[in-house]
Amino acid sequence: MLTELPLAAYDWWQRLGFDYPVVWGTAIFAAFAFGACLGSFLNVCIWRIPRGESVVTAPSHCTSCGADIRWYDNLPIISYLVLRGRCRRCHTPYSCRYLVVEALTGALFVAVLLKVGLAQQVPAVLPLYLWCILLAISSSWIDARWRIIPDALTWPAIFYGIVIHGVLPSACGAESHVAGFLYAFFSALIPGAFLALFAIAGKKMTGKDVLGWGDVKFIAASGALLGFPGALFVLLAGSLSGTLYGICLARARKRSLKRCSIPFGPFLGAAAVIWCLAGNWIWHWYLVFSGR
Ligand SMILES: [Zn+2]
Image 1: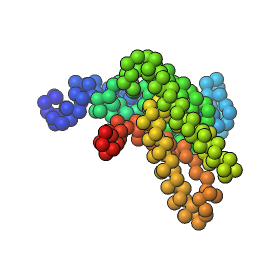
Image 2: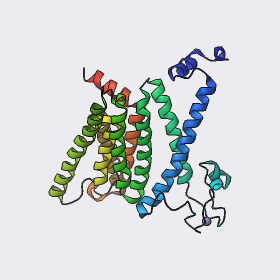
Image 3: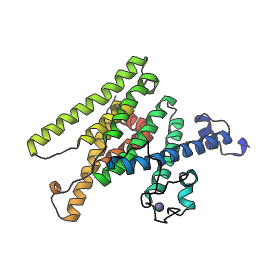
Image 4: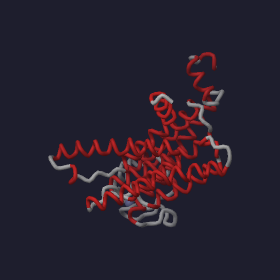
């Protein structure tokens, strides 16, 4: 069967470390299903965290009629399609966010798995990238709607990133657990502290919040999860694209840029996802072009 496949595709699979299409297919399906399940949990976080509700104690319930949602109506993607996006009891339509977040998380999990295999990265980066995807999607959604990036998302990500780097130091090429731990710690601290100073100075000079504390903690979290170059990329690409969007928005609405408030979360989140999917290549090009 393998010989019938184009050689290039087989090369792909081998590079991914899977010799058999069945294994490869199963791994992709498992990654998608795992992502979709966690996406379902993200939907709970996106709804409850900004409203100050617990994400663990109360069981899933319809936000309209309050009916508990049974397990078979709570299957990611499938239940949404079967019930055509409505509550089984009161038939109130649910937001398409439920479907989008679940499918997007699943698809990005598959993309990250393929990328780590293709780029022949150490598997230790996977738990970091996957958490980064979860953080990026939830923060983007909440920031776009509520203009906040909750501490309940950023602090656990900072803590998790530092711990995982300590446990799996090969993720950043460190030789010992202590070195991995210190690398992640300072990758979070330095960009975070720099931005915090920027936020304080900006507030003193303009009397307004030029940067939210949620954004500062998001950058620290991307340092803990993706390392120092990753945090730098998220900061630069996220703030540039966000500012560009702000300028376009101000022009379209014929207002000054100062009077348009832009949620930076979706731009920082998109930059973090791009780094997970192409960071090592971006870093390689940067080193080549800067002549190192
Ligand atoms: Zn209902």
